[in-house]
Image 1 (tube, rainbow, N blue to C red):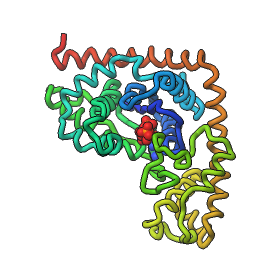
Image 2 (image 1 turned 120 degrees about the vertical axis):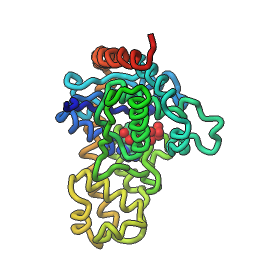
Image 3 (image 1 turned 30 degrees about the vertical axis):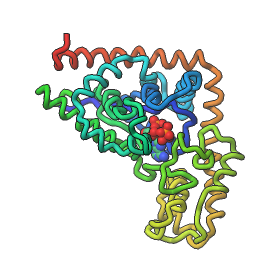
Length: 334
Ligand code: AQP
């Protein structure tokens, strides 16, 4: 029997969405909505694993919802809602906390990165974040998960949890084993200041990332200041192996132009990076500024955003309750 395809993906409302979120995940969402049923979730319970100012969190939930709509996600075709409005996420996360193993969580590199050197002071929520992510996906029995490459390890844990649940409770095939959908050309957009680190909302320097709400002037300034090296553009991709910043800019440009990086290199071989930076700025302004403008328009219409989230919640709740009923039965809860 073939299983109906269903995609689930979440974005944390932790501040300005950036080019990494856009190229690594959001553009994938837009194409996916044409192929299968999709659930797009503003994962606010994930956001609070690190402290969030309550007022800012509320605003960021609206802003992430606005970003979903601004990039072209259809609120009628897809389910768009915020995670905390469906309590089944937290309930299933608890059940999965009891299935997942401490050894598995200890291997998660994102926890090590985010907790920093003093792990004792990190929240318990940050440590078990991957179990909540597994619950988000499995609550809807999603079959596909569009994510950036940074989330691949968490998705592997989700697959392990699903398999262990099915085996422990002798419920073969109850949870489908979800497939990651990772962008092929640019799965990880790197910081503009350090090509070995991913572009991230929590990076202190504003110059490390392009935010979706940046003005054209800000984009041009950030690209001008982006780190490169003194060598010209090479003719072959393998010559970029030890030049992470140069590779990052070229990959971003190739992705925006929907052109293979090798073709770009053949056209630009021997030119200075200032040549690429001018072209990259133009492409970014043309792609990002209209999205930012739309987000700014939508964010002023809170009543509309609330209506979108409420409609999504109703649809998500129905699916979640159906699955939770079976999960409670399988586990032996009354
Ligand atoms: N640099 C990136 N390159 C490619 N994809 C990325 N994603 C995030 N950064 C990059 C993908 O965007 C989706 C939403 O991410 P998120 O905001 O929910 O969480 P995150 O991965 O923790 O993003 P940040 O910017 O790094 O946030 P902070 O700094 O708050 O931790 C995900 O699919 C992610 O893979």
